[in-house]
Length: 468
Image (tube, rainbow, N blue to C red; front, side):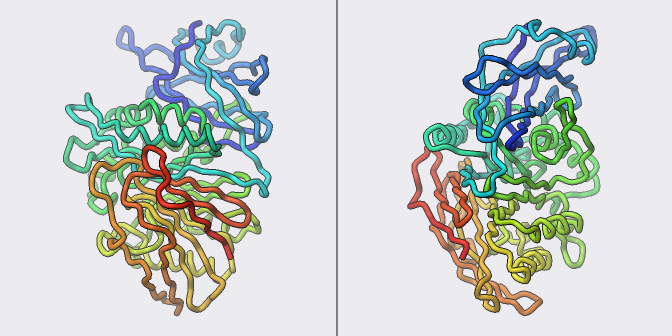
Protein backbone atom coordinates (compact mmCIF):
# COMPACT_ATOMS: atom_id res chain seq x y z
CA UNK A 1 0.00 0.00 0.00
CA UNK A 2 1.83 3.08 -1.27
CA UNK A 3 1.48 6.27 0.79
CA UNK A 4 1.18 9.62 -1.01
CA UNK A 5 2.28 12.88 0.62
CA UNK A 6 -0.48 15.25 1.82
CA UNK A 7 -1.98 17.50 -0.82
CA UNK A 8 -2.15 20.25 1.81
CA UNK A 9 -0.19 20.22 5.04
CA UNK A 10 0.83 18.65 7.26
CA UNK A 11 0.09 21.23 9.97
CA UNK A 12 1.30 20.79 13.54
CA UNK A 13 -1.54 22.12 15.67
CA UNK A 14 -2.07 22.24 19.43
CA UNK A 15 0.96 20.73 21.14
CA UNK A 16 1.52 20.08 24.84
CA UNK A 17 4.09 18.27 26.95
CA UNK A 18 2.52 14.91 26.03
CA UNK A 19 0.20 15.42 23.02
CA UNK A 20 0.36 16.89 19.52
CA UNK A 21 -2.32 17.29 16.86
CA UNK A 22 -1.30 16.82 13.24
CA UNK A 23 -3.62 17.91 10.40
CA UNK A 24 -3.33 16.78 6.77
CA UNK A 25 -5.33 16.54 3.56
CA UNK A 26 -5.61 13.64 1.14
CA UNK A 27 -7.36 13.84 -2.23
CA UNK A 28 -10.81 13.44 -3.68
CA UNK A 29 -10.68 10.71 -6.31
CA UNK A 30 -13.84 9.78 -8.21
CA UNK A 31 -14.63 6.66 -10.19
CA UNK A 32 -17.91 5.38 -11.66
CA UNK A 33 -19.87 8.38 -10.36
CA UNK A 34 -18.64 7.80 -6.80
CA UNK A 35 -15.60 8.78 -4.79
CA UNK A 36 -12.88 6.33 -3.82
CA UNK A 37 -12.42 5.68 -0.13
CA UNK A 38 -9.46 7.70 1.07
CA UNK A 39 -7.55 7.16 4.32
CA UNK A 40 -4.94 9.15 6.17
CA UNK A 41 -2.08 7.56 8.06
CA UNK A 42 0.67 8.78 10.37
CA UNK A 43 3.57 7.33 12.31
CA UNK A 44 6.05 9.05 14.63
CA UNK A 45 9.14 8.45 16.71
CA UNK A 46 11.39 10.31 19.08
CA UNK A 47 14.17 11.99 17.15
CA UNK A 48 17.38 9.97 17.19
CA UNK A 49 15.61 6.64 17.58
CA UNK A 50 14.81 4.10 14.88
CA UNK A 51 11.65 2.54 16.26
CA UNK A 52 8.35 3.99 15.03
CA UNK A 53 5.10 4.00 16.99
CA UNK A 54 2.35 1.92 15.43
CA UNK A 55 0.66 3.75 12.51
CA UNK A 56 -2.61 5.58 13.14
CA UNK A 57 -5.32 5.65 10.47
CA UNK A 58 -8.38 7.80 9.85
CA UNK A 59 -10.94 8.01 7.07
CA UNK A 60 -10.86 11.24 5.06
CA UNK A 61 -14.33 12.45 4.08
CA UNK A 62 -15.50 14.79 1.28
CA UNK A 63 -17.53 16.99 3.65
CA UNK A 64 -14.27 17.73 5.50
CA UNK A 65 -12.52 18.30 2.15
CA UNK A 66 -10.63 15.03 2.57
CA UNK A 67 -8.82 16.27 5.70
CA UNK A 68 -8.11 14.60 9.02
CA UNK A 69 -6.49 15.25 12.39
CA UNK A 70 -4.30 12.80 14.29
CA UNK A 71 -3.57 13.06 18.00
CA UNK A 72 -0.10 11.82 18.91
CA UNK A 73 0.07 10.81 22.56
CA UNK A 74 2.66 9.64 25.05
CA UNK A 75 5.15 12.40 24.20
CA UNK A 76 7.86 13.57 26.58
CA UNK A 77 8.27 17.27 27.39
CA UNK A 78 10.59 19.42 25.28
CA UNK A 79 11.64 16.57 23.00
CA UNK A 80 12.01 16.48 19.22
CA UNK A 81 9.88 14.03 17.24
CA UNK A 82 9.97 12.88 13.63
CA UNK A 83 6.80 11.96 11.79
CA UNK A 84 5.58 10.77 8.42
CA UNK A 85 2.05 11.18 7.19
CA UNK A 86 0.11 10.78 3.97
CA UNK A 87 -2.92 9.21 2.34
CA UNK A 88 -3.92 6.23 0.24
CA UNK A 89 -6.96 4.76 -1.49
CA UNK A 90 -8.42 1.42 -0.41
CA UNK A 91 -11.69 -0.40 -1.02
CA UNK A 92 -12.07 -1.34 2.61
CA UNK A 93 -13.49 -0.19 5.94
CA UNK A 94 -11.53 1.70 8.57
CA UNK A 95 -11.79 -1.25 10.98
CA UNK A 96 -10.00 -3.50 8.52
CA UNK A 97 -7.44 -0.83 7.65
CA UNK A 98 -6.53 -0.46 11.33
CA UNK A 99 -5.79 -4.18 11.59
CA UNK A 100 -3.26 -4.17 8.76
CA UNK A 101 0.35 -4.95 9.47
CA UNK A 102 2.54 -1.80 9.76
CA UNK A 103 4.80 -3.31 7.13
CA UNK A 104 1.97 -3.00 4.57
CA UNK A 105 2.60 0.75 4.32
CA UNK A 106 5.09 1.79 1.65
CA UNK A 107 6.32 5.10 3.05
CA UNK A 108 7.89 7.82 0.97
CA UNK A 109 11.15 9.36 2.26
CA UNK A 110 9.47 12.67 3.24
CA UNK A 111 10.09 13.30 6.93
CA UNK A 112 8.80 16.11 9.15
CA UNK A 113 9.57 17.04 12.74
CA UNK A 114 8.26 19.08 15.68
CA UNK A 115 9.13 19.73 19.32
CA UNK A 116 6.81 18.94 22.21
CA UNK A 117 5.83 21.56 24.77
CA UNK A 118 6.12 21.92 28.51
CA UNK A 119 3.74 22.33 31.43
CA UNK A 120 6.46 23.90 33.61
CA UNK A 121 5.23 27.43 34.38
CA UNK A 122 8.77 28.66 35.02
CA UNK A 123 10.00 27.93 31.48
CA UNK A 124 10.23 30.89 29.07
CA UNK A 125 8.66 30.62 25.64
CA UNK A 126 9.21 32.23 22.24
CA UNK A 127 6.41 32.99 19.77
CA UNK A 128 5.98 34.34 16.25
CA UNK A 129 2.76 36.36 15.99
CA UNK A 130 1.03 37.96 13.04
CA UNK A 131 -2.14 38.41 11.04
CA UNK A 132 -3.57 39.50 7.70
CA UNK A 133 -1.93 37.35 5.05
CA UNK A 134 -3.30 38.63 1.73
CA UNK A 135 -3.25 36.28 -1.26
CA UNK A 136 -4.95 37.99 -4.18
CA UNK A 137 -6.62 35.57 -6.59
CA UNK A 138 -6.64 36.57 -10.25
CA UNK A 139 -7.96 35.16 -13.52
CA UNK A 140 -10.38 32.71 -11.96
CA UNK A 141 -7.90 31.50 -9.38
CA UNK A 142 -5.13 30.54 -11.80
CA UNK A 143 -2.72 33.30 -10.66
CA UNK A 144 -1.88 34.35 -7.09
CA UNK A 145 0.25 37.10 -5.60
CA UNK A 146 2.73 34.91 -3.71
CA UNK A 147 5.10 37.57 -2.35
CA UNK A 148 3.70 37.19 1.16
CA UNK A 149 5.01 33.65 1.39
CA UNK A 150 8.49 35.08 2.04
CA UNK A 151 7.31 36.15 5.51
CA UNK A 152 6.91 32.52 6.52
CA UNK A 153 10.37 31.67 5.17
CA UNK A 154 11.75 34.35 7.51
CA UNK A 155 9.86 32.93 10.48
CA UNK A 156 11.13 29.43 9.70
CA UNK A 157 14.69 30.75 9.49
CA UNK A 158 14.27 32.27 12.94
CA UNK A 159 12.93 29.01 14.29
CA UNK A 160 15.95 27.13 13.00
CA UNK A 161 18.51 29.73 14.10
CA UNK A 162 17.07 31.16 17.33
CA UNK A 163 14.26 28.81 18.30
CA UNK A 164 10.50 29.35 18.35
CA UNK A 165 7.88 27.44 20.31
CA UNK A 166 4.68 28.31 18.42
CA UNK A 167 3.11 30.45 15.71
CA UNK A 168 0.01 32.53 16.53
CA UNK A 169 -2.05 33.58 13.49
CA UNK A 170 -4.59 36.00 14.91
CA UNK A 171 -6.97 36.64 12.02
CA UNK A 172 -7.45 37.04 8.28
CA UNK A 173 -5.52 33.93 7.34
CA UNK A 174 -7.42 34.14 4.05
CA UNK A 175 -9.16 36.96 2.19
CA UNK A 176 -12.22 35.12 0.96
CA UNK A 177 -13.84 38.35 -0.20
CA UNK A 178 -10.85 39.60 -2.24
CA UNK A 179 -11.65 43.10 -1.03
CA UNK A 180 -15.26 42.67 -2.17
CA UNK A 181 -14.54 43.28 -5.84
CA UNK A 182 -12.94 40.21 -7.41
CA UNK A 183 -15.28 37.22 -7.27
CA UNK A 184 -15.72 36.80 -3.50
CA UNK A 185 -16.22 33.25 -2.26
CA UNK A 186 -19.79 32.30 -1.42
CA UNK A 187 -19.97 28.50 -1.77
CA UNK A 188 -18.29 25.83 0.33
CA UNK A 189 -16.23 24.51 -2.59
CA UNK A 190 -14.93 28.05 -3.20
CA UNK A 191 -13.91 28.45 0.43
CA UNK A 192 -12.20 25.05 0.39
CA UNK A 193 -10.29 26.01 -2.75
CA UNK A 194 -9.25 29.30 -1.16
CA UNK A 195 -7.82 27.53 1.89
CA UNK A 196 -6.05 24.95 -0.25
CA UNK A 197 -4.37 27.73 -2.21
CA UNK A 198 -3.40 29.74 0.88
CA UNK A 199 -2.10 26.85 2.97
CA UNK A 200 -0.19 25.07 0.22
CA UNK A 201 2.15 27.92 -0.65
CA UNK A 202 5.61 26.38 -0.14
CA UNK A 203 7.00 28.45 2.75
CA UNK A 204 3.88 28.55 4.93
CA UNK A 205 3.56 24.83 4.34
CA UNK A 206 7.12 24.15 5.49
CA UNK A 207 6.66 26.35 8.55
CA UNK A 208 3.38 24.87 9.75
CA UNK A 209 4.69 21.34 9.28
CA UNK A 210 7.30 21.88 12.02
CA UNK A 211 6.02 24.63 14.35
CA UNK A 212 2.86 24.32 16.50
CA UNK A 213 0.35 26.73 14.97
CA UNK A 214 -2.70 28.33 16.58
CA UNK A 215 -5.32 30.26 14.60
CA UNK A 216 -8.42 32.35 15.11
CA UNK A 217 -10.60 33.96 12.46
CA UNK A 218 -11.42 37.58 11.76
CA UNK A 219 -13.72 39.15 9.18
CA UNK A 220 -11.99 38.18 5.93
CA UNK A 221 -12.54 34.50 6.60
CA UNK A 222 -16.17 35.47 5.88
CA UNK A 223 -16.43 38.98 4.39
CA UNK A 224 -15.10 42.46 5.14
CA UNK A 225 -16.32 43.83 8.50
CA UNK A 226 -18.66 40.89 9.08
CA UNK A 227 -21.49 41.10 10.15
CA UNK A 228 -22.00 44.82 9.53
CA UNK A 229 -23.24 44.34 5.94
CA UNK A 230 -24.90 40.96 6.38
CA UNK A 231 -28.55 40.41 5.57
CA UNK A 232 -30.75 37.43 6.37
CA UNK A 233 -29.68 35.63 3.20
CA UNK A 234 -25.99 36.05 4.05
CA UNK A 235 -26.56 34.52 7.48
CA UNK A 236 -28.14 31.36 6.09
CA UNK A 237 -26.01 30.96 2.97
CA UNK A 238 -22.63 32.73 3.04
CA UNK A 239 -21.95 32.31 6.77
CA UNK A 240 -22.52 28.53 7.07
CA UNK A 241 -20.27 27.88 4.09
CA UNK A 242 -17.50 30.15 5.38
CA UNK A 243 -17.63 28.86 8.93
CA UNK A 244 -17.64 25.19 7.91
CA UNK A 245 -14.47 25.75 5.89
CA UNK A 246 -12.99 27.62 8.87
CA UNK A 247 -13.70 24.67 11.14
CA UNK A 248 -12.08 22.25 8.69
CA UNK A 249 -8.90 24.24 8.02
CA UNK A 250 -8.31 26.31 11.16
CA UNK A 251 -10.41 25.06 14.07
CA UNK A 252 -9.89 21.33 13.77
CA UNK A 253 -6.26 21.26 14.94
CA UNK A 254 -6.81 23.74 17.80
CA UNK A 255 -7.38 22.78 21.47
CA UNK A 256 -11.13 23.25 21.11
CA UNK A 257 -12.02 19.64 20.25
CA UNK A 258 -11.86 16.78 22.72
CA UNK A 259 -9.57 13.85 21.94
CA UNK A 260 -10.36 10.15 21.96
CA UNK A 261 -8.27 7.31 23.31
CA UNK A 262 -7.61 6.03 19.79
CA UNK A 263 -5.94 9.25 18.69
CA UNK A 264 -8.71 11.24 17.04
CA UNK A 265 -10.77 14.36 17.77
CA UNK A 266 -14.50 14.37 18.46
CA UNK A 267 -17.35 16.65 19.40
CA UNK A 268 -19.64 19.29 17.94
CA UNK A 269 -18.57 22.90 18.31
CA UNK A 270 -20.70 25.34 20.29
CA UNK A 271 -18.16 28.20 20.15
CA UNK A 272 -14.82 29.11 18.58
CA UNK A 273 -12.86 30.61 21.49
CA UNK A 274 -10.37 28.40 23.33
CA UNK A 275 -7.57 28.41 25.87
CA UNK A 276 -4.29 26.60 26.46
CA UNK A 277 -1.21 26.75 28.68
CA UNK A 278 2.34 26.60 27.39
CA UNK A 279 5.29 26.94 29.76
CA UNK A 280 5.16 30.34 31.47
CA UNK A 281 2.34 31.50 29.17
CA UNK A 282 -1.40 31.04 29.45
CA UNK A 283 -3.46 31.89 26.37
CA UNK A 284 -7.12 32.76 25.95
CA UNK A 285 -7.92 33.02 22.24
CA UNK A 286 -11.14 35.00 21.88
CA UNK A 287 -13.68 34.87 19.09
CA UNK A 288 -14.14 38.60 18.52
CA UNK A 289 -16.02 38.19 15.24
CA UNK A 290 -18.84 35.63 15.04
CA UNK A 291 -20.67 36.51 18.28
CA UNK A 292 -21.10 40.21 17.53
CA UNK A 293 -24.48 41.89 17.80
CA UNK A 294 -24.15 45.62 17.09
CA UNK A 295 -27.94 46.02 17.04
CA UNK A 296 -28.32 45.05 20.68
CA UNK A 297 -28.42 47.83 23.27
CA UNK A 298 -25.76 48.00 24.56
CA UNK A 299 -23.90 46.50 21.59
CA UNK A 300 -22.21 43.16 22.19
CA UNK A 301 -18.87 41.90 20.90
CA UNK A 302 -19.07 38.49 22.62
CA UNK A 303 -21.79 36.37 24.18
CA UNK A 304 -22.21 35.82 27.91
CA UNK A 305 -20.67 32.34 27.82
CA UNK A 306 -17.42 33.63 26.34
CA UNK A 307 -17.33 36.57 28.74
CA UNK A 308 -17.87 34.26 31.72
CA UNK A 309 -15.14 31.90 30.50
CA UNK A 310 -12.69 34.77 29.98
CA UNK A 311 -13.29 36.30 33.40
CA UNK A 312 -13.08 32.90 35.11
CA UNK A 313 -9.78 32.24 33.35
CA UNK A 314 -8.45 35.65 34.42
CA UNK A 315 -9.39 34.96 38.03
CA UNK A 316 -7.65 31.59 38.23
CA UNK A 317 -4.59 31.72 40.52
CA UNK A 318 -1.57 31.63 38.21
CA UNK A 319 1.92 33.03 37.89
CA UNK A 320 1.85 32.62 34.12
CA UNK A 321 1.77 35.53 31.69
CA UNK A 322 -1.84 35.89 30.53
CA UNK A 323 -2.10 36.47 26.79
CA UNK A 324 -5.55 37.42 25.48
CA UNK A 325 -5.87 37.14 21.71
CA UNK A 326 -8.56 39.31 20.20
CA UNK A 327 -8.37 39.78 16.44
CA UNK A 328 -9.16 43.51 16.63
CA UNK A 329 -7.25 45.71 19.12
CA UNK A 330 -8.81 46.43 22.49
CA UNK A 331 -6.98 49.77 22.52
CA UNK A 332 -6.19 52.32 21.19
CA UNK A 333 -9.31 53.52 19.41
CA UNK A 334 -9.12 54.59 15.77
CA UNK A 335 -9.91 58.01 14.39
CA UNK A 336 -12.11 56.33 11.76
CA UNK A 337 -13.43 52.83 10.99
CA UNK A 338 -14.02 52.53 14.73
CA UNK A 339 -17.37 50.74 14.39
CA UNK A 340 -15.52 47.48 13.69
CA UNK A 341 -13.22 47.68 16.76
CA UNK A 342 -13.64 47.34 20.52
CA UNK A 343 -14.40 51.04 20.87
CA UNK A 344 -17.84 50.34 19.39
CA UNK A 345 -18.45 47.80 22.16
CA UNK A 346 -17.32 49.99 25.02
CA UNK A 347 -19.52 48.37 27.66
CA UNK A 348 -17.93 44.95 27.33
CA UNK A 349 -14.47 46.47 27.04
CA UNK A 350 -15.09 48.31 30.29
CA UNK A 351 -16.30 45.11 31.93
CA UNK A 352 -13.08 43.28 31.07
CA UNK A 353 -10.73 46.12 32.02
CA UNK A 354 -12.56 46.87 35.27
CA UNK A 355 -12.43 43.20 36.20
CA UNK A 356 -8.66 43.14 35.68
CA UNK A 357 -8.29 46.32 37.76
CA UNK A 358 -10.63 45.34 40.58
CA UNK A 359 -9.09 41.86 40.97
CA UNK A 360 -5.56 43.32 40.72
CA UNK A 361 -4.69 40.81 38.01
CA UNK A 362 -1.10 41.09 36.82
CA UNK A 363 0.77 40.12 33.66
CA UNK A 364 -2.09 40.70 31.20
CA UNK A 365 -1.19 41.19 27.54
CA UNK A 366 -3.66 41.69 24.69
CA UNK A 367 -2.51 40.36 21.30
CA UNK A 368 -4.21 41.58 18.12
CA UNK A 369 -3.88 42.14 14.38
CA UNK A 370 -6.31 43.52 11.78
CA UNK A 371 -5.14 47.13 11.38
CA UNK A 372 -2.24 46.68 8.90
CA UNK A 373 0.47 48.17 11.08
CA UNK A 374 2.38 46.96 14.14
CA UNK A 375 3.19 48.46 17.54
CA UNK A 376 3.02 48.02 21.29
CA UNK A 377 1.19 50.24 23.75
CA UNK A 378 0.09 50.16 27.36
CA UNK A 379 -3.01 51.10 29.32
CA UNK A 380 -3.00 52.66 32.79
CA UNK A 381 -5.76 53.92 35.05
CA UNK A 382 -5.77 57.28 36.86
CA UNK A 383 -7.66 55.80 39.82
CA UNK A 384 -5.38 52.73 40.18
CA UNK A 385 -1.64 53.48 39.90
CA UNK A 386 -0.71 49.77 39.94
CA UNK A 387 -2.96 48.90 37.01
CA UNK A 388 -1.05 48.05 33.82
CA UNK A 389 -1.93 45.99 30.75
CA UNK A 390 -0.01 45.75 27.49
CA UNK A 391 -1.25 45.54 23.91
CA UNK A 392 0.78 43.96 21.09
CA UNK A 393 -0.53 44.58 17.57
CA UNK A 394 1.11 42.64 14.72
CA UNK A 395 -0.29 43.20 11.23
CA UNK A 396 0.19 42.42 8.45
CA UNK A 397 2.07 39.34 7.26
CA UNK A 398 1.50 40.71 3.74
CA UNK A 399 -0.61 43.60 2.50
CA UNK A 400 0.42 45.06 -0.89
CA UNK A 401 -1.38 48.38 -0.36
CA UNK A 402 -0.83 51.45 1.88
CA UNK A 403 -0.63 50.61 5.58
CA UNK A 404 -2.11 52.52 8.50
CA UNK A 405 -0.04 55.23 10.20
CA UNK A 406 0.40 56.46 13.77
CA UNK A 407 -1.96 59.38 13.21
CA UNK A 408 -4.78 56.95 12.40
CA UNK A 409 -4.98 56.05 16.12
CA UNK A 410 -5.90 57.87 19.31
CA UNK A 411 -2.59 57.37 21.12
CA UNK A 412 -1.84 59.35 24.26
CA UNK A 413 -5.56 59.77 24.75
CA UNK A 414 -7.85 58.79 27.58
CA UNK A 415 -11.28 57.27 27.58
CA UNK A 416 -13.65 57.60 30.52
CA UNK A 417 -15.65 54.67 31.74
CA UNK A 418 -19.13 54.56 33.24
CA UNK A 419 -17.76 53.39 36.57
CA UNK A 420 -15.77 56.62 36.96
CA UNK A 421 -12.42 55.22 35.84
CA UNK A 422 -10.21 56.97 33.33
CA UNK A 423 -7.91 54.78 31.26
CA UNK A 424 -4.97 56.29 29.40
CA UNK A 425 -3.29 54.80 26.34
CA UNK A 426 0.44 55.29 25.80
CA UNK A 427 2.39 54.20 22.75
CA UNK A 428 5.50 52.24 23.84
CA UNK A 429 7.07 51.50 20.45
CA UNK A 430 7.28 53.02 17.00
CA UNK A 431 4.36 52.30 14.67
CA UNK A 432 5.69 50.12 11.86
CA UNK A 433 3.67 50.74 8.71
CA UNK A 434 4.99 47.83 6.68
CA UNK A 435 4.63 44.07 6.42
CA UNK A 436 6.14 42.28 9.39
CA UNK A 437 5.66 39.72 12.15
CA UNK A 438 6.31 39.97 15.88
CA UNK A 439 8.73 37.80 17.79
CA UNK A 440 7.60 37.72 21.42
CA UNK A 441 9.67 36.20 24.20
CA UNK A 442 7.81 35.52 27.45
CA UNK A 443 9.33 34.94 30.88
CA UNK A 444 7.63 35.01 34.29
CA UNK A 445 8.85 38.59 34.81
CA UNK A 446 8.43 40.29 31.45
CA UNK A 447 8.34 40.26 27.67
CA UNK A 448 10.66 41.06 24.82
CA UNK A 449 9.03 42.14 21.57
CA UNK A 450 10.74 42.58 18.24
CA UNK A 451 9.10 43.32 14.91
CA UNK A 452 10.71 41.81 11.80
CA UNK A 453 10.00 42.89 8.25
CA UNK A 454 8.94 40.40 5.62
CA UNK A 455 12.50 39.31 4.75
CA UNK A 456 13.47 38.93 8.42
CA UNK A 457 15.36 42.11 9.29
CA UNK A 458 14.62 43.67 12.67
CA UNK A 459 12.61 46.89 12.60
CA UNK A 460 13.94 49.26 15.24
CA UNK A 461 15.18 47.77 18.49
CA UNK A 462 13.68 44.93 20.55
CA UNK A 463 11.43 46.19 23.34
CA UNK A 464 11.36 45.10 26.96
CA UNK A 465 7.87 45.17 28.48
CA UNK A 466 7.77 44.72 32.25
CA UNK A 467 4.77 43.79 34.33
CA UNK A 468 5.37 46.16 37.26
